[in-house]
Length: 229
Image (tube, rainbow, N blue to C red; front, side, top):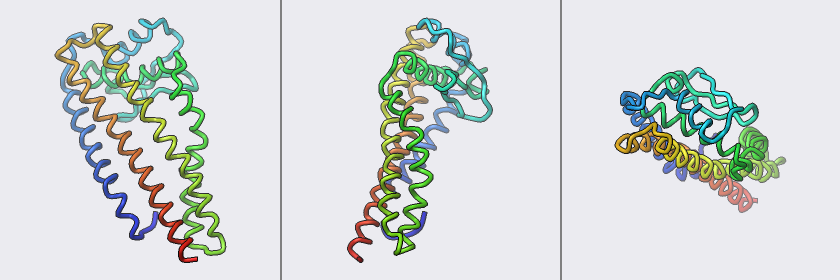
């Protein structure tokens, strides 16, 4: 947002983010070329998993973009990128099962998912308005109180990132188990699917670390401002 000596504490997060992006690109690219022996496409796997759990009211739709896959709890829709939706690679099955895992979390009332959903408005508010208030409080002495207010708002976005971690880890755990139990992955194919999901999980860890260190940096700035006053 602006440069000051405290920005050095962001270096670990920057390194981890770059590493995570490299890992997901590498794993997804590699296992997109390894096709599952079951022959299921991502869309077929998602539908089969839902039906195996007696869930028939969740839609499965293709969506534009690469790695744009997500589950929308508002309209109960699993949206899969074109490559995942139509593909029958280990990467496609892993990603499709992961997003379907979120649909199962929703259907079973998985508490961390419900908690994350309640935090979405506050997180969006905090991530957008928080830095603006912090910037205003930093540069305008008369409005220094905005610095602390901005930190409070930004903390909501950080909390959202932390709540997201168990949600994503659980969805990945469910994905592997569901692909195996439904006969979509052979034992020797599990390793590849798990590598894709582990790489994806690392991106969420990097996002959480970035948010935590950014919040720490803002707090250090506020403490330094108080000492100056």
